[in-house]
Length: 267
Image 1 (cartoon, helix red, strand yellow):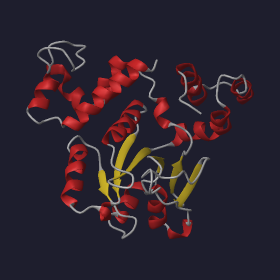
Image 2 (spheres, one colour):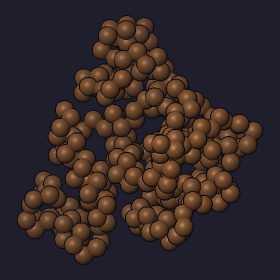
Image 3 (cartoon, helix red, strand yellow):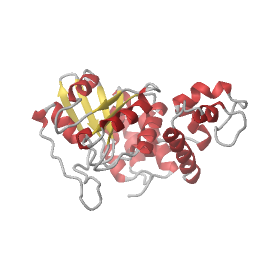
Image 4 (cartoon, one colour):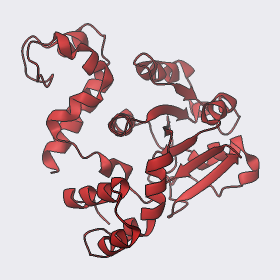
């Protein structure tokens, strides 16, 4: 389907936040400015935007391989939408060295994000993750194949969600669903999966604003020489100094630079 254009993303944001009559929205939905696969899900997305409590970002260490840059973009989305964010690093049973898992987890824990190390196969970390979801509505984010469905099955076996294996040739997951799914883990706990809807397309910001959504950058920004410091080429930049001292992780800074470039290239 391709990426959404800026106009389409702005139109979808209007659907999420505006308070016009439903009939008016239906008319706009079918005006041709919004892809039909988005239009079909508008009622569910509106409900989600209104009632969601937190975003659970799921990634895996292997099969498919870990992509911290993708985690960081989901965190930007959470900061942008003022959602609490949780990170689940799954499939730790496939790691030879668990210390590597703790090293990655510490990158995010030290800047305030809860991180759960889990294995849907052997049950490790499942109960603490379930406790973090209790009595809340949680949106689920992450690539196919990272084990989202397996995690839900591990928490509530009665769900019996179909799980596809990772492709041995591409090392990527195959999409198991193509429509919005709402899973009730118990009477007060719901998880919403949005397959087929690119949550990252909702990062609708100017490249110069990207720094505002990296919380460790914002904590240091007052100590930069320039009020609008982008933390890239400027002199006397507190963020770059912290990077040199090891106070900011290189992976986080690298993902920031990549996000800035992608926002420059995608208007």
